[in-house]
Image 1 (tube, rainbow, N blue to C red):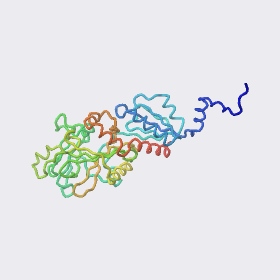
Image 2 (cartoon, rainbow, N blue to C red):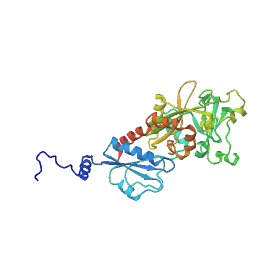
Image 3 (cartoon, helix red, strand yellow):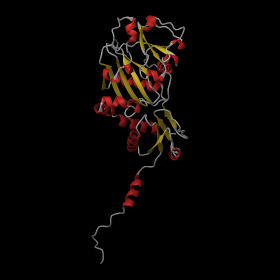
Image 4 (cartoon, rainbow, N blue to C red):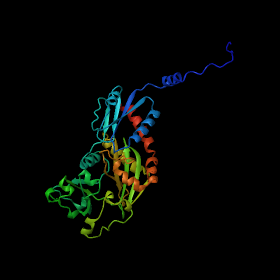
Length: 345
């Protein structure tokens, strides 16, 4: 029987529909290579952000490699187009053969502060405590904070001490107790920025200078009075990280001047893409000061193993706010897409 002239033509094969869709996609022009540090970030975070990057810019392909076990095929794929390599922490065993590379790395606290100060970013006056160190209270104020440069110790608030400026003395490394971080690296002395009756800190996580979240952390308890005895002042917990989770009150906020200072910090040390900026505000003047940038890379606390217990204590609502109050993953995707378009080589 002859086919009716009005009968619709057969639908095209599914395969040809797929091929047509593919032919309409713009050709890849560059690669974003994301280096994953297992335990420091969840791999699923990078997959989610990678999908967003592809939607934002279909001409950018995304390759995700592991720092500890890079896949040679993916490593080779990353060389086929101009690339930008982003790694929150050290590259590990991944050795990029092509591309502009940004990665986290430890930077001595004094070097961080020196570079920030040289760039005009507000930091407290800071010095390495040495045998010939003399502190003038007219310049340093009545109180200073003495803290270790040893990264493992300072990240937990160990041996960070508030002291009257006139009492600060150099101690040779061998004279510290066996477990004191002063044996493992020099001590810093820093002008005390008084945040008021309670210890308070802003943690701003930035990616290429753009804030992903701003968390305000405040002690629930008043600190000791500054008119107390030297012994009581020097025994006081003065660092936020030295407080128990039960003694902290946390919220996610946005303050323009805090965000601006964090952006300025990135411009001073632009080779480190992910920075966990710790900022305090002087209760008397309202001026914010950067204490450190935590440039090593283990600051992706959306999913880091380092903060797993803290996230469990804080609960799901706090984690929802961390993720969404500044649309962290969406912001990260837009930033990575833009930097890749601009700098891939």
